[in-house]
Length: 427
Image (cartoon, rainbow, N blue to C red; front, side):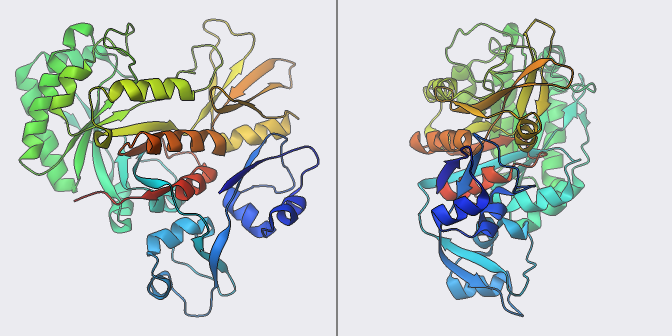
């Protein structure tokens, strides 16, 4: 795999000749909505097939899998044009294998809301080991609040993707609540009621395991939270179901801040099977413009987590979004979220060149809106994704996890497929 950064005067025709790749493949791999609209500084993924097959009448993915000894899932990953479906068209050129082998293997998780576009979900499932519907909630007395997860499970399980039950301390208003978590954690009866409800739902729905995400915990609950996790872990273990905990990206034991003070990694780690590091939102809507997931900070958080968890317990979080900040930055002048495809379109519309911060390993650009106001946009592109996936492989981590899948980012999956063998979840 190579990544080409668009220069002034570049066209797809010129790049096709330069790299000896068909224009059609450049368009497909990068899912370019308008191939004529390349932005200076835009990153394009280039993959070089070692073996291709021209589809004939009667061909199926299964038949091609048997013929070439490549799994149907890998054929779907190698050919984004199929959008996750076994719908071959005679004359279509499919990639059977690429020239370069992956650098390693990873488990891949993704969070999704029940409202995700079904076609987007279908196109994404081949690249996942796990799908985590977001989110089951609870009341202060430990009653489990249902989630309309039927369609997500209906799509994931036949696709060979393992579903993970997600429990969070999110309120009806959609905000994480330390108070809600405290009322549960400090009430043994409520905790027991919630654990029983989780076990029942996991069994009935066919979930593989559970992912718990309590955020903004009170520092006084730093010892109660591991107790709850241990209680849930013990109950799940009796059913053969593992427990994952989602953790804010701490870098030291006594790190100040509402996100960190209620999390004691040394107490949590013995009570869970896996940990998922939420290594994003250093750049956040209420803060100043900066990379959402700057690589030095991501590395620092991962290295601290590895002092409490083994590499094969740890998943590295990757954001599938960016932010657009109005300038000048002032407290209360909040950024708005943008998806990574929209960010490139916005750069085109505003005649802005995309820049790349080498230290943060993240793309960004300034622009002026129609009312003359200045903005700064930070987002993710193939270069920033490559840096984070390579970090997970370098550290020998269990895998990566995407927040979230509801926005299209086709280049991400091309990069991931090039760098890593995607492992099926065990069990």
